[in-house]
Length: 122
Image (cartoon, rainbow, N blue to C red; front, side, top):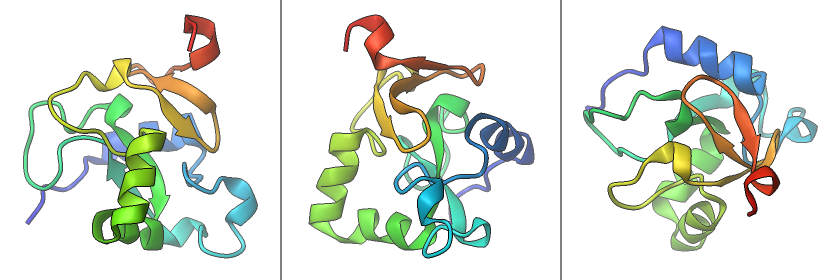
């Protein structure tokens, strides 16, 4: 069983992203991304514990259907890696860009701030 995402992290995630799916954005809320369907997706860390798993730069909201598909469907998984929603290997999540429906192409920082990838030359 995986460890539970701490409540303080979920509150900080809501403050940063407004409880909106990082994949679909707010426009999809009436369909698959209603607030009750959103789950925290850890970009890196997978199942179980990790020293860096519960960092704000490592977590985004996804609707539960998309979350399941990026784990089970190879095409969706490849797209999640391309977008930076999932990450491979031992990485520093603050240094890995993400295509985020709320913030655009950006870097998510552990202090809750978001830096546009364009600001750093991406």
